[in-house]
Image (cartoon, rainbow, N blue to C red; front, side, top):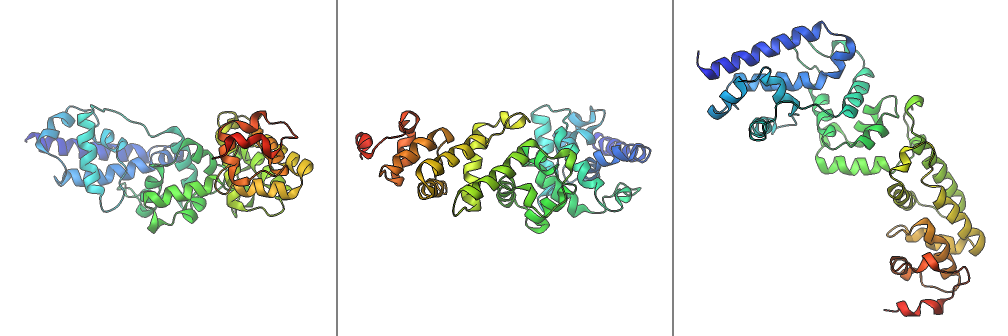
Length: 330
């Protein structure tokens, strides 16, 4: 038997042993390894047919204890390009000397939760290791390429995160650009107004703070807009990114307080002008009070972003007048 045939036989034996062990495993283990199982079956079939193995690959992978598992830890099949992707992965593993790779822990947890919420999940893997819903696994695999840990935590807040994902990104339209657009929409959403059941044990403190902030802003601003509010909240979220992970910190409190102050001290018209500016450009909560005073004294709303960049509103006094910013004339 030549080396190529030996490697093919080794990979087929590895897959058979893997499936046999999987059938003896617990339900949780089956769920955690569903995507890996799908990838291993796909890769095994193409390697066995000789489609992707090159002569220079054989010795390298023949020396591995579990070559198929190593390949599939790096490989997530997508669509018509799956075969080319597999060859690329094989070449990259060899060139980068990769012998093991684990999917991120947050993706393992999210995939487990997605599958555990499906009907007949116990029959998800056939005795031959076949994935009954290959389209679903391809979808989850594609989504997992771009999901951050923050995105996974967001989705874990729902009892059925797959419903959220599939509504935002239909199975038949899951190219990378659409996924990024959907994730951006998701990150700006208020989970309490989304039409999905929440998993109360996994709801993040930041989600509660966001919900309250949106309600408060809707009450303060005469004519609020979803996208504009989302821009203001995103700025605060970025400023307090690390603190937002903590249940002790409300990243939106200073924004709401500043808007209340602007409305009470200078009226709803001034606040509306500042708020509407957020459609294109937001300033920090610490700058809102000074900007409101500037506008109340006849300032030009179009110049607010430039003045903010110059640090003008960080030191401005409540009774600042238009003449004080003449030095900023263009």
